[in-house]
Image (cartoon, rainbow, N blue to C red; front, side, top):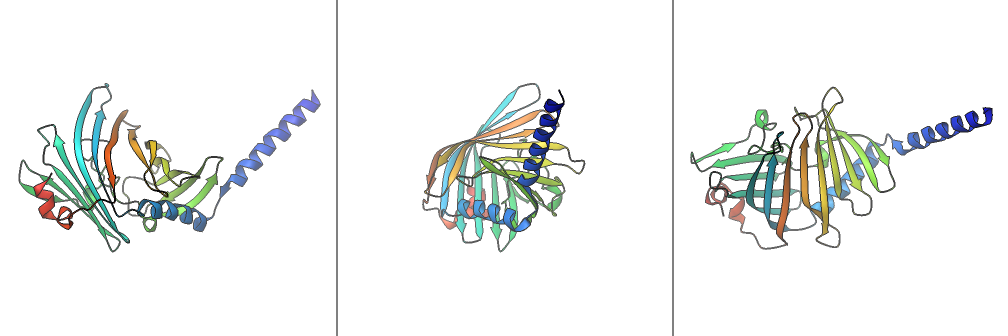
Length: 256
């Protein structure tokens, strides 16, 4: 019995040691891993796709919306336009996000009022079109926006923790990054009480270039309200020609 107890204690000690070795307080290494994710994501020049959004409320009721998206990358600058095509009550609604010189500007066009609204810092935590994604969630994940704290190296993925000083929504985030492809597979969102409040899961990863794997489906779970929003991509085209006017207020008003 004594030998069994000693063996058990040694096993627990070894497991504790292994876990402590996995967690590394190395901001530079964590940042380098995340920068590789960002570098691969911006390694393409452009992308267009059809997106299907399905919002599920706590009672299991669903609402579906269809969108056309255009994305363009130019060095450290990026441009994104989403225009809703269905259902009729949101048709023509557009969302434009422009990241230039490290600064992001977001604008929403509502055809029902014929007005373009600039999303201010106080509105970045608002739900995007009733979904479980906020305007902040739809912004670029720029490594320079984060303070990295530690990383864990698991068999299949890295786990990085980072805080975002400019965020009013989240105290910190934890990113699961697949080792073999440097693709994000999950993001965990925490509040100031260390409670996980949201989780983003990426699924059905597709190899779109020799360096880039992108999900065909992403699901954002709101853990506080027991809701979720799925986004599925189809008809994805990479490195297509996109007119510059798409990423202007003209393109926002014009829609599809």
